[in-house]
Length: 235
Image 1 (cartoon, rainbow, N blue to C red):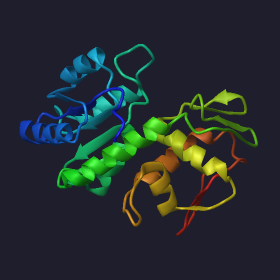
Image 2: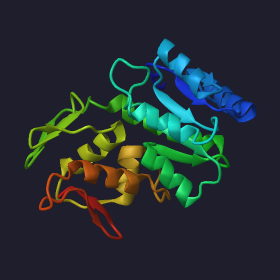
Image 3: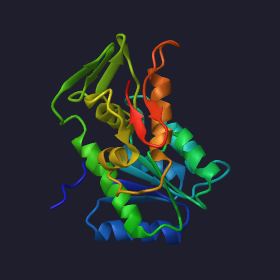
């Protein structure tokens, strides 16, 4: 039986038909769900009960979901949002630019509105599964000046604390387990995001790029190395 998340899935969508349909299907699959029609409504619900995952659909213009997502990522402890809250952006057409902007704003995943509910459910379950496992894997990993503690879900580099979002940390942890090994794209998508083999997505590349930037201390050290046509290794 699937373990229930600690908080609800927060669906934020001004489109009543789409938002209502997604919420209804999630409820039928035994998820706890809160449905918000605007960013302000989402804030009210989040303050009352912290969500476990956010699904961000059509929200008031001009920037809608991206503006709310950036607000979440910049939040500080004790405020409305947990800055590490996993979030899936439900976009319009799924163009390359739309996907890129979502990941740059801090999305953990992106799904075009034309995607089926079954695909959405699979993505939701994969993220919640990873979130539930965070901090439960035994081990304190050290790679050079990089230290990773999976119990506290924290990492430091040369004594400096790294501010990593949940999926960035999970990717780093996976790579650090065998730092010189090249993990294939399929391996990382399956182990970190729970995707099926052969999945086509920019999720991995976007997270790897953000993680690399956060690990850059000087120009001599190289981290999260892209092995073209294969995948990634940590060092």
